[in-house]
Image 1: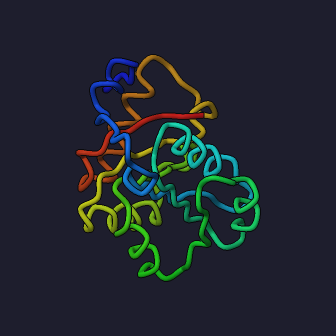
Image 2: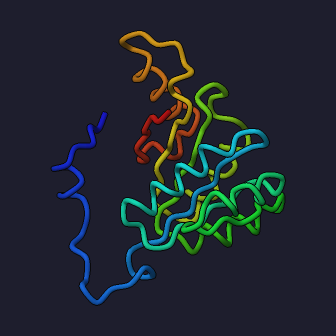
Image 3: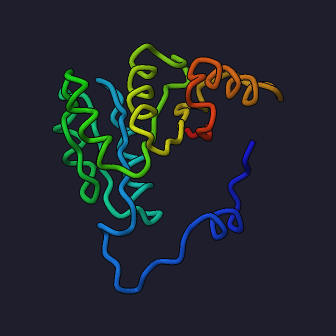
Length: 165
């Protein structure tokens, strides 16, 4: 398990070019959200912007796109087409994909399909387990859940799994 500390972050991030612009500071593509749950995609997108990502694309189901278009004034939300070719096109343009999984649901068929596309494109990925506060826990819960996510997404065993609420 990786502990994200200030030192870890400083050592992991490259020095920024003083003449750079948001197009040179990395592109993040976040695939998240469902009807009734607009908080996680908004928080993920805003966090990516606030932590220095250059361009942040947010793909969400069409039904919640109008809400996130208002909530995310710095990230770029797009309605998520049911056609996976459209998702792939967005993923091809990013440097890192954040794959957000609902902790209460675990890895779904759709999560697996989207993660597969990201993997096939050879993109860096971070698996984000959201709603971690809603899961009943003991001292081993996080590690057991992380192992289950890696088991469910075997082909992405290289991707770090982080937990948020």
